[in-house]
Length: 373
Image 1 (cartoon, helix red, strand yellow):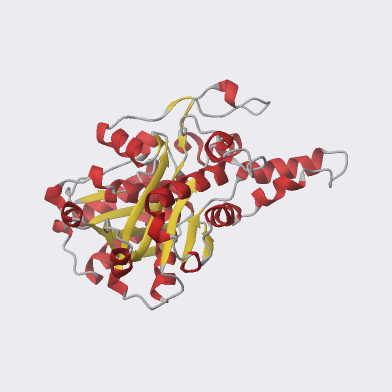
Image 2: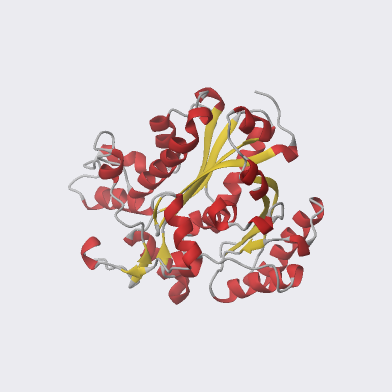
């Protein structure tokens, strides 16, 4: 493994699982049509004495872990892990002939929130059972943050660096940034990176308690990318989808300061990469609700003006939280969603999170290379 130049990283593969369905095709078709994938919840799917506090959600249609992965090794697998394993598998099925040819040099950086359902259910069993240790031991691994990442690596034979990242709405970009650092330092030849989120009753109830009416509806899904140097992609016969130009992150102490934090991030990444705001082809903001969303909009208006066009996924998919920026990035780099006229023009993903972080990532979709690949 060799050190990779800072400006040499590209996204050369993409897989998406979303409320539109399983696979990139369903995702791009749904977004291109502007179809809202949030639908009324089926009460029969969520039995018990703890009702879901929202009437609708953006769920992955027909998501059944044994049906998608088989029964072997999935009996105790929770929904979050299942979404991550399925999406990672989709990427490797399409790009893995070369990407995973060297398992030791291929790793995974996955953004995950930790499964609230698994943690709370396991704790409840320990507190309400006849004895605290009368719990199902096979369910305990699901309560550990790095469990989905580890299961993905084991199932798909990825033996390179394996890391889990958790950072609210910005998790997808934080995972991409961490993977970039690993590659530039020569710790791997290629990395799968992205983020996943699940819908559960526990997540819905906690979100409602924290955010009130501004929290819903919720969504779920995952987006995973293949990140490597342009040279490594060419060696594997893969055509780059986008060049990764840079990322910036900041914290803020109150909602009123969120806009200034995001302004600083966007201004810095544009300046450091020599990018003129007028050259941007598209922006994918997080679309946060309420005052936080107003701060994000004001910051983008201040730095970028009324254009370029903005692509908001939250009204279509629901609040996908941990997976949101990964899905936003997928919407910008998926070939089926880009116009040839935008070839070579950079695009920007932004977020502001209620926990006090803001950030952005700048990429350059390579439509022209796809046309000649």
